[in-house]
Image (cartoon, rainbow, N blue to C red):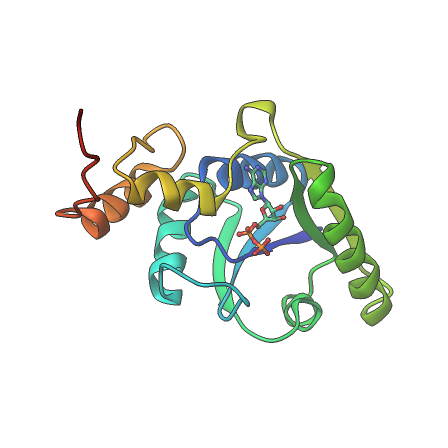
Length: 168
Ligand code: ADP
């Protein structure tokens, strides 16, 4: 059985991540979406909330499970008995980082295969940070994130008032 792991911060999960998970779930017998506890990023959501949002988003995919993790991704892969690491690639700008990570991970775990999946065109512009910025400024993110994420962003930014521009 081929087991794949899709790791990420998922702060929060977007429709682009879900699309990658859905497509990877068709390729591999089991897919584990792994939510990294302590990425070196300014997080908006805590680990439990990020895991919960991912679980809600992939609930209809029977061969997909979700786990939090900390430490090295290769250690998680060993623990899971997984064979493949899946990552999504949006643009050329993603490539350099993903190539470096893939090469290092294969140095640490030579049996590992890394599978980079090109983002679907409709999500190739989408990132968690852009979603947070739109939501923070009162924009509509309903076509960019799963419904549960949208609800949480709405709650988070309810009652938020920006600086009013002066008029002529
Ligand atoms: P990380 O902090 O590890 O980069 P992210 O949560 O930002 O984690 O992303 C997890 C994975 O999903 C990464 O491989 C990333 O390139 C990919 N990804 C992010 N946004 C999209 C998208 N819009 N479409 C497809 N894949 C994406």
